[in-house]
Length: 172
Figure 1 (cartoon, rainbow, N blue to C red):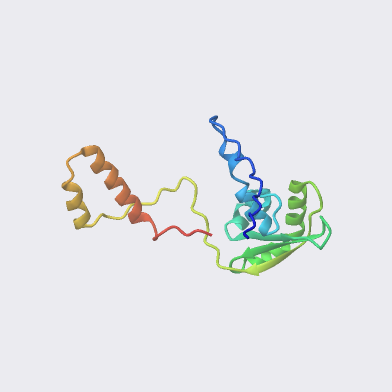
Figure 2 (spheres, rainbow, N blue to C red; figure 1 turned 45 degrees about the vertical axis):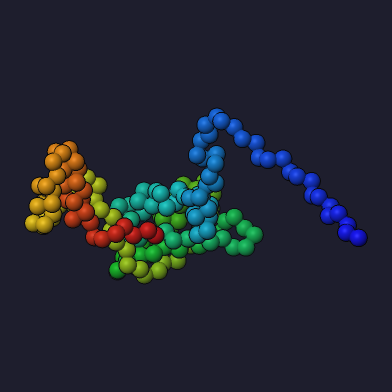
């Protein structure tokens, strides 16, 4: 004799709406999760690093993480990656950097800094336009064969932009 299987009660389907919704309502704060992973509960330290340390130091350093003692929200260690011989100079201004970070965050989050030697590419200067490289003969001949002048101009612009890049973009 077969026993009938008990059916699970069906849950109601998710409520749907035809009204448009903001993307921020649909997607969790992905950037915030990435910053929290490295100890930055607020991305303001990373975003405003040049204001904190100045342009000279910001070109050759970057904050990596902010770690707090277990169960506390103050007295943390700000880990900073520094290129070249800038580490002793940044260590010399450590009290000012700590004071500026704490002032920016609004509480004594950082007690000390920990510096790590790293290769850091300096950011490109704002307003500096890279000079496009000369297009190859093959590219120029291919562009000549395109009849539509707008399409030809767009493709030539794309080819020039690609000639100034250093390969595919690097995602960090």
